[in-house]
Amino acid sequence: MFLTITTTGTIDRPATDLGFLLHKHPGKSQQFSTAHGTAHVFYPEADAERCTAALLLEVDPVALVRRGQGKGRGGAADSALGRYVNDRPYAASSLLAVALRSVFASALKGQCAARPELVGRAMPLRIEVPVLPARGGAGLVEKLFRPLGWSVLAEPLPLDETFPEWGDSRYVRLVLEGDVELAAALRHLYVLLPVLDDAKHYWVAPDEVDKLLRAGEGWLERHPEQRLIAGRYLARRGSLTREAMARLELARLAEADDAAVEEIDNAVDEATDTEERPVPLAVRRREAVLDALRAAGAARVLDLGCGQGQLIGELLKEGQFTEIVGMDVSMRALHEARRRLGLDRMPERQARRVRLVQGSLAYTDGRLKGYDAAVLSEVVEHVDPERLPALEYAVFGAARPRTVVVTTPNVEYNVRWESLPAGQVRHADHRFEWTRAEFRRWAGEVAARHRYAVAFGPVGAEDPEVGSPTQLACFTRQGDGSVAAGGNGDARASGGREMGGSGGGDSCGGSDAMPSASARGGGPGRVVSGGGHDGDVGAGTSGRKGVAA
Image (cartoon, rainbow, N blue to C red; front, side):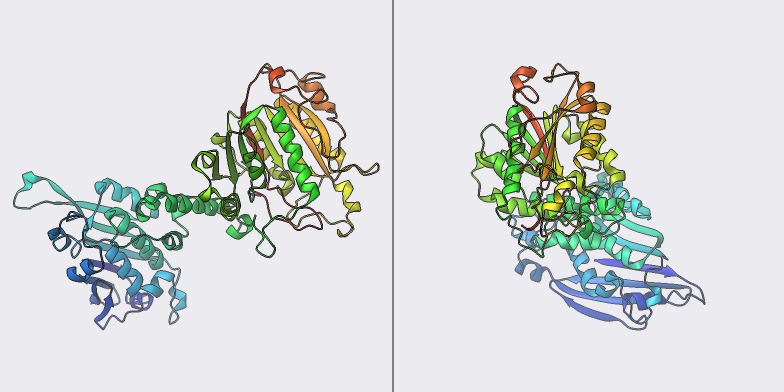
């Protein structure tokens, strides 16, 4: 199999600079051993105006068979002859991609110690691959390379030139032209050649996800065909493809927020124990949320910003909640939640109740529509104040669950935390902490804008001067046949009402809050529950919540 890379230049910027970037001298012919044959690098032409580097890979069919993958696309998997007689020595495939990574390793990484000023510079490139298997035809070749800035020629090759009536083969002659950085061009080829061939010669292990994301950094997260690329590159292994797609979405969100991935994907604090220690207030907070969900008659629960899955674990203990979906922007948090919940070891019937997905509360999401209740537990304080309207619309305006439960710290209570210095918030990622009056004002305005009634309650032991450590608001959607006890939505949105004063906080149901599901005329439904459920002062924390803030 064969590939050429050509560039043009001038006296000031000679085309032979290509040799510096590839770390291969234009005046030499070099060869390198690979696992399945020998790779040769040479320059058919090399002067200031035009320089072409060629990579010729001689594949040893016997070596390919001995390593266990000789079938390719030219021979049947169960055919003894097909293991030796196939297209692998002639058609560009994952074999050529591996050779690119091996022979041009430094160039692929964008490294050039001899001429560092050349790195990152776009240059006029022409890349030719004489024979490329293209499952999906020339049209797919266009879809994969054109969004990356290439001018694409994908010329179908006839099955036999002597018999044109036989039609075209599955192979194309590929020519790419464009002003592209060499390192980026090599990464495009490294990923997309095996994607088009769709028949990797080696076993796809979990570390292939890291290889894909490293080679795809800077372009794959925005590629319109990223799902097809990830699926084919990872040999259609569903679990690996889902992981890759989730990590690509995280990279996209980080780019949209102009932030590093680590700043968003940090719901698991690696500097501390990720196991939640028994914290009475954290337990009471979850109990208050569970009371609200029970009273709402909820059966299907979506835990937005689920963090490490503490609330999901409690929901799983109760048969009322038949479907539980945890949502978080952090893949690390979702992996930790999966581990803590033991989903891989859970009986199938129980495991079917739980699904973990990646998403952000800063954007509307069609997956959240049609649920009965939403819980944002210790979430809103992790959102920049100017982005609260986006969260508000995503939950109350777009998703519009029948019930929304919000918990957040009461900043007035901070003076009672002996370990918390004066003027500091409880968690380093808290963008603000509200007084009781500020929280009621925000909740009342949200309720009025979106036709919800709202009631308030304490969580934790109440102090006569500063209130409870956590405050809770329970919203009930109005105007769809549900009638909140004590008044209409506008009235309660303006002033709110108390839910009761128990140390653990009342639920949204009961005579002193909203009516039960049966009183509202609705049966068991779906719940959206959110929050990373971080720990409290003096007891450790579990990191940032699942929002892109």
